[in-house]
Length: 306
Image (cartoon, rainbow, N blue to C red; front, side):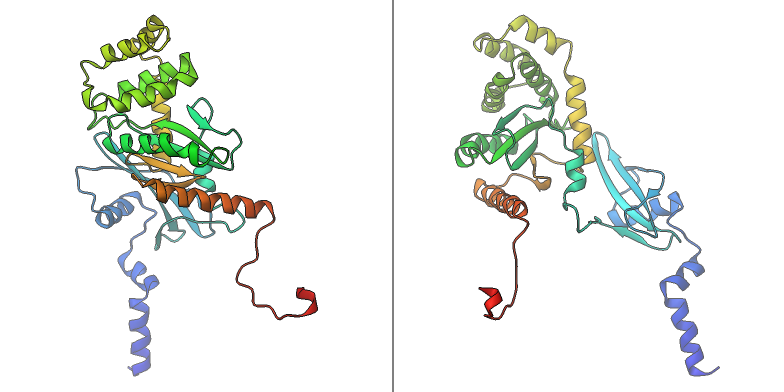
């Protein structure tokens, strides 16, 4: 056999297309895709895996799959793209240069019937997923309440969303239900409740939560009987569950998690860091309103440039 012929055959066998044909595997087959992703993501047999049916991907030649890994209350959704011949798997986001890079997140974030503070119609919108029993959420809440509106009185609006982590925080869900009950009865008083429950976080237990809540409500001007009925009947739990479902669709897996004009900012960040992000977004919105700014242009000093 001529050397170049042998090299050609070897190249074919080592090429991705040649390997796919030899192996006979296709990621369009769900068990094959699951096995591959378990190895990739270190998901052991204890983790339950479900894979959605294929749908059209935002790029030609690929199918989109949502892969969900779950263990107890924990759940993670990942999106993967599989080539039409089943030989390629792409993990990551697909962006349209003509759209916001956060279009997908913005389409999932809701603002109606959520507690909020700040200027209506503000250029920067924050959505905060939080857990009343989370110590990092307490820190985040205190710094936001102390600094956000003082620093950005007209440029920012914040929406509060519930993400109680039931697996490790036994009273967080009930506190979220209570917060929604307060908001339903008297929206402005939600922020009084928010500050109170975070301030008393170290004193609250599953056993004393209702008693402490009723004691607080008695001095707040709320209808205590109405609040107690709402809490006991868990009338707002569907709202908490809807907030949880929204968070999962956005791949939120920890608290606190902020979205700044759709940009995900997970974990507790210093206010200095958040301030810089908000200022960047304000500048971006202003530039977009002016039709954009010129960047990185080399120009000669001609009369047309004056």
